Length: 471
Image 1 (cartoon, one colour):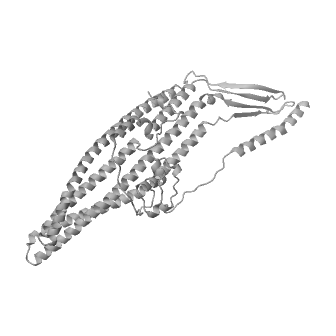
Image 2 (tube, one colour; image 1 turned 90 degrees about the vertical axis):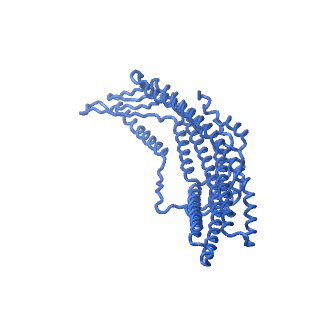
Image 3 (cartoon, helix red, strand yellow; image 1 turned 45 degrees about the horizontal axis):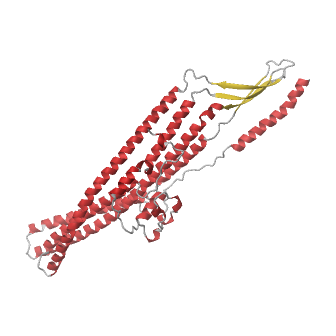
């Protein structure tokens, strides 16, 4: 009778404990909120409604302090700011950063304890015997052994993702400046071509009048018609290029494809200071976010390799137990289980993590060499473009003076419209050449600034990263 009294006194408390545990577990669970996709046409935010928070922009102080006001047009700095804030690919990259931070949070959590419960009853029932049960709670100590390494690896991965995002922001900002320069240059190019096309039309009209008056043979007007059609073709090509540049800029800025931006302000890049280039090359490994990202990736892999080493030690699960046999006798004890590292000993994972670490070291070395090579190539190209550009600019004033003198002669009917157009064509050709060289030189400067981190804050690895472990 005493045995059944113990059973009846235990059952309500057991049920209460079970109910309390279930309530606690349910209270700790995350709720589900559906977020259905929005079907139908895409929605774009106009440029004047994009919210710009200067504190969140990781660009030079001059860009962060520049007033963003699309109402009076967009200058180069405002276009750069809008690109970093509203670019669709950067939005995805920032979502990846949130995922990486969540993974780092998950890596730092302690493992949940494991509860075991078993029950037995005699079949068929035996008089005098009660149902037996066994309960226990265990904790995996092996997870604690590798927890620090796993958490540091996850933190390094977050750093890597953050630096990869910063590098992508630099590239998007550089692309925005290059597209700004390209579009403004194309607008100037189109104006030159349009003037020449109109001048060719004047020459053809004058030749047609001379032909009608019998002062010009029919075969003489042919070259004029060919020249007019050639300039019309160039004008159509310029229109297509300008249309493509406008769409490219709108896509980069995350705006509707039919957006026509009012671009204002200068479209140029400062000259390259080769002494500053040499100084920045010496700091490239701490200045370039992509290199810092690779350093963080190597540090994270080094921690994963260390975790694989630690995981070869026996995994131990320990915890107290409470049981009752079928005679009603209660007992309290202690349980432990461990894996014997005899056959596997985690050697496969250790080999994989070690080889991966070696690959990441090679990847960093290759990227560093490629970065220096890219800077040297762009610097050489910029010197060549600068020399060609200066030569072309220096020759333009003499041509323009000749055209001005020809304009006076044309107004006094001392030369024909055909001769004047020939001179004007040579000047237009030189202006077009200058515009192309100018755009190329400024684009090269912007690209070089992006590779060097010109005026960008240093982004060297934090003390938690082990970039210095790179051999």
